[in-house]
View 1: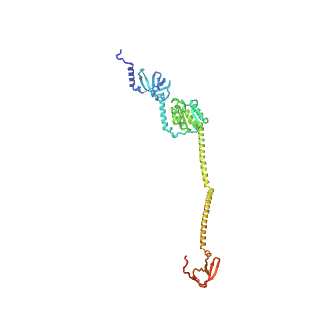
View 2: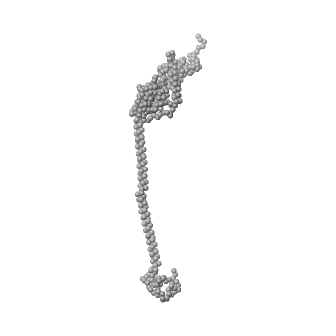
View 3: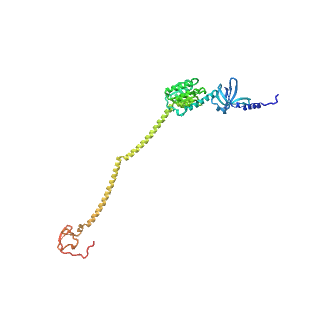
Length: 406
């Protein structure tokens, strides 16, 4: 019997340390076929890798699920990268996966990146070359498989959105040998048909299935096409070189149909909204112009020559009335003043004096006699009284001792 006896835990722990200390096992990639694949409710994935010679247990914890870009299933050929360690409780080793790729995808992906870089350096991805997608396309060209789900999705969406848009299908081979040439030929053929916009794509699949849309011949056909091209290859997570070259990328064929075919119902609703808005705008503008016209008519009424003449006529009438009133007042004042003057003149008139018993004496040559010194004895005189003239001769002049006061 051996001197040193160990527990199971000690042995498993020792073996685990041996695995942990081996650098090769800490970073390793293993290729094989997936079997016993189980997606646990915790998010962990338990599966096995097998080939013709054996099997290895594998696990991908939920926290590492970001390293899996596809839905893994039984029979898939994959490359699992991670570390090999011992699960102490069961005393068995297993591969702890950090990243899982489909077999062959790594090389294809490197080829994809290299080609993408080359075409980008040529300027084929430059936004300056992108053509706008027409808003109201009448004809839509489709380059895809005649029997795939993609063409049915496009037809269904297009028919629902606008049955009046014509769809022209070029039944291209989208997978396998000769697929890239078929897609490129379809693009050129529909370009000659002078369609308004073109959808180029297919349904989802692996990188191998979509590889035709990563070929340079397809990229050049899209780039040189004078018709706007919408790429619709695979699912939303699938990206191909055709997506970078195309004038617009759609995540799915259905989405491409949404972008290419304008919605007749929405257009009708938009036109109805424009009609109502235009009508409201015209009514508001008409009301404003009607109000403005009323204001202008009112102003013209005030500014019209007839109104001005009426206004001037009324003003003249008022001035005439005022003038007549002032003239009457002036006449009254003048008449009153005249009466005063007449009364004054009457009082000053010689006739008035004469009527009071006074007389007016003149010489024969009508020289007024104001003093006795102006008369010689025996000189003829004319004595004016109220009712006539008395002719007399001066006999004698007697001087008054006290003159009249003036």
